[in-house]
Length: 337
Image (cartoon, rainbow, N blue to C red; front, side, top):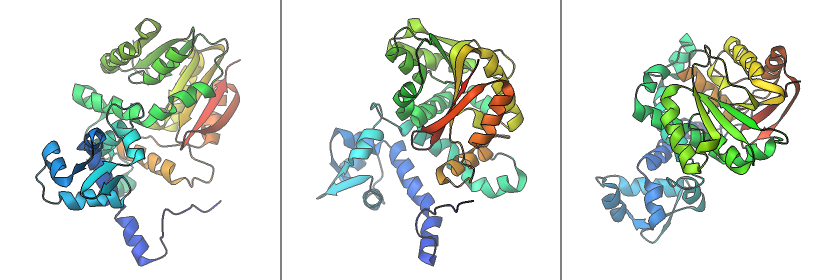
């Protein structure tokens, strides 16, 4: 087994203290996203005083906070005026084409608080989130935060996904747990003749309708409301499980893969992408993603390529291949004869 590569210096007391305080760095960035600092500075650079007025802040600690964002590399300062960096201006401005802020807002609301319970989760194996997914679905505001969080996580992968799949002869695509249908809307909008569908909980359908209308593909996409475990899936030439199987324990994943096999038309493919672990399990980002599942689900966690490949074969899939996908994901393509 290869050794994990540490993030930063962990061989000195100062380095260990720095690692232990990285939660402060995360809080600084997540707070800037929540306060719309980057969106405000996208309009024009501003002094601390101007930002105080534009953001409705008290002012105490603000200059130190903005200087910290500069030190972290997410803002620039010229004279007394602050401005976005090229990266934050591209990725953290609300409404921009490459905005990933939806995921960070969700992380601030849903993940950041529960990490205080990591020790308890490791002792008991139980999630530490105060609410559950079912109760969240009854709150339209919370559902809105959730679906935008999912978009923020995958937005930069949509075109790469389209390029990674062979669409020759494929007339239909189904995104299982596809939330607002943003990926399906992108695929349908850029692939002539392709029709798309999303299978997800009924409370998400209004958000799906918004995306379909914005993308101009309402006549080519369909939303199928249902329960993942109780209801059959509609059939399609390409079925997608994206960032979904990690929500469930191995037995539940096996069941969903069997359902996927029934949904894929003969000659079609199941495409899975997720923060899969390597055999050595030494990827820091993906290991953290697996701990996220420990903290917010009853039995979920990331899995290795070998584990999910074996389960896909047991479900009946053949010609299973994998490739790197985006910065952290692995994409598995499973053919059905």
